[in-house]
Length: 348
Image (cartoon, rainbow, N blue to C red; front, side, top):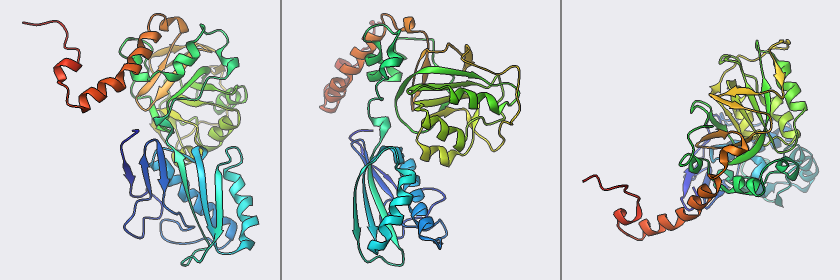
C-alpha cells in the first residue's frame, strides 16, 4: 500500500486509545505506532516491572500486527522510563523480544501519568517491500538469474501468464503480510501426528519455506507458538499449511509469515504415524509440490512449482511489473482509459 495512508484505531483484545489518536499509522511502507503502556485491555497493570515491560511490548506487537508488521521489522524504538534504575531490568526483558533484530533505539527518563514506562516504534510493512533474497545455497540448481527474478516478481503477475501452480484460495496468508520467496521443505502429516512437523522444523535450512500436507485433515492445527518460534530459530522464511494453525496472536508477533486454511484450538498430538514423512512430494492446496520447488507467497496467494514451469514466463512477468508504475501514472494523469488498457480485438 505504498503511498496510501492507513490508520489503525485499535488492536482487538488490547488497551484501546484513551484519546483522539490512532494506535498506528501506515504510510509509504512504514508504520508509526503510538506510545504503548503496560496495561491490558481492562486497564490493569502487572505488579512486577519486568512484567510491565512485557505487557508494553506485547501491546506494541499487537499494534504492529494490526498494521501488517511485526517486532522483527522494527527499525527504530523510542523508550520512555521514569527512572535510570529501570534501564538495566528494562534491557533484560527487551532483549527477549529483540535479540536477533536490533533496531535503533532512544531511551529517556520522563514524568509519566500513572505508568512506569511507555514505548513506541517505527517499523517496515514488509508486504509493501520486495521479498528477502534467496540465500545463495538455496539458489543452487536454479537457472541463472531465476532467484533474483523471483525475488522481484509479484505473485499475481505470474497469474497473468500461468494457469497451474496456484494453491487453492482457501490456503491464504494469516500472519506476516509480506512477499516471500523460498524453496519448499516438505512435510506430510498423517493421523494428527505432531512429531512429523517437529522433525521437519529440525531439518530446515535458512530461507526454506515449510510446506505441510495434512493429508486432508482440516480439523487439527499443526503449527502454534512453539513450532513457529522453532521455525524462526531455524531461519524459516515462511510456513504454508494445507490445514489449520493455532495461537494466531502469537504467530503474528513471532513474525514468520504463515499461510493456512484457518485456525482452531484443536491440535495435533504426540503420536507417530506411518503415514507421516518429511522431504517427500506433497499435495497442498491442489498443487503437487516437490522438495526444493520454488515457492512464492504474498497477501494475494501462493504459487509453487518446478523451475522449468517458469521458462519463457518469468521475463514477461518481470517486464509486466516494470511497466505497471507507468500505466498507473498515465491513468492518474488523466489519460484515456481506452488508450492505456489493452482492449483486445475489435468485436464489432
